[in-house]
Length: 395
Image (cartoon, rainbow, N blue to C red; front, side, top):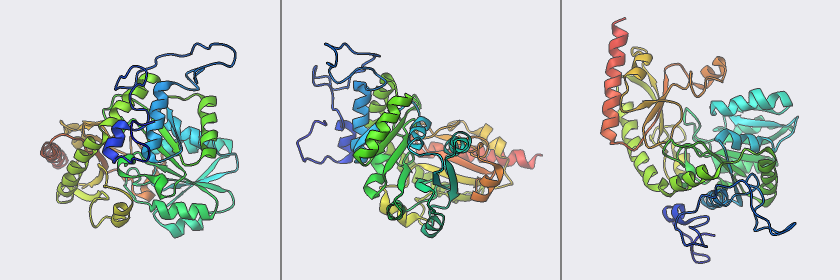
């Protein structure tokens, strides 16, 4: 348990540091030890100290799992080797013949595992605009068993009213699964809004330093906890002890990092909206962005992902070649600013016609705003825009 008085509710900044298992009771170490072991000595048949084999349970991973469960205000947490391993385990809760409704601009990896792995086994899905409650309800039929949403969604930052969608799901006896990667429990807690399962690519903001790959899932009730615990142990996609420890360490600084991410993102969203190189900006922190009021009502901030459409007068390849401070690469949520091309990178697995229909056009750029000096980031974008314009006009 966290090192706090019973009933004493800590503020989020403190809970990030002292939640879950706070330190080591046996030695007094303030950092949870790395239990780098595969198995455990047993005193006799059926006699152990709560651990038998590290796929089933490991004290370092357990500390992480209790921490994320407390942060998300859930019953139990589960740590996996990647975000996709976490989503895969959650999808294994369903059976052949079931259908999931998924957000219209969802992470490409989520689409890929549904389309290429689970669909052949009979698990169906349908892409819907989950920001429209009427559209969601109109697509519910007896085969639908769950709603899988991202809010804000990747990469167009579409905002879904989590409380309203969760209430609709309960009305039809469906589960609500929310990918909370972009927000983290520091900014948004879907379980408190009515969702049943939260998943994270913990590789991103929770780890925060681009030095680990991990996934987390948190469930709201004990029945789901038992089912997911069985799947985690049976399929074995668990997070190793060292990465569990790294992730705990990353979470401790989440509040200070995200506060800086948010400050920088607000500055850069305005910079991009006013720049002639940019045709359109997607960022839920802008007052005229669809879903702005919903975002403010269900989260403590707009996050630090900004997507924007580069004007056709600018050469997008030259833009990506010209960034210097900003790193061209897959992923997001690290201390460094990262930029990517969704159509050919993160969402390449989604067919072209679907990408075009939802707005993932070839000129779309996704920027993960880091915690560098915000003016330095803007200056790097400005220089890349100049090079992109020059390259286009010289051809």
